[in-house]
Length: 171
Image (cartoon, rainbow, N blue to C red; front, side, top):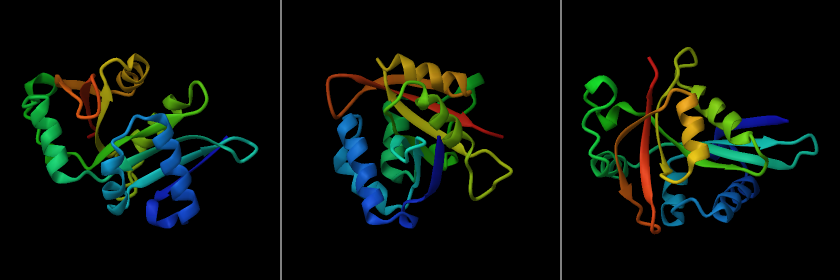
């Protein structure tokens, strides 16, 4: 197994189309926002098996400010852990688009993305992420890597389920 992570602009169009198709097939993403987020040049992660087949993907998205604010507003997450005031602007990235075709790779992708900070390699990035309330496996993984749930679950605009906000302020 091996991984490649870099800005979306550094991948060729065929690779970006593969990424989009994998995410689309997983049906976990608002495809209406996908292209706008890709224009912001996120960091994409591809994980390959020994035969060079893609077995997992993920991204550190550069959030759209209005969307980031609405996520924090929707969850009513004024206060984070230990009643510390949360400011959405403190978070550089929205970790997401994590799709694993093999059991256990979600953990590896989350670990890589949670610790990847190209702007300051000696510092971990400040990341938030959202996950479906009923996705117990991903919620377990997030907690394992120090993400904390903040605020209240809110109704998704994509379906009849709720979304939960997690934050990780790496200092």
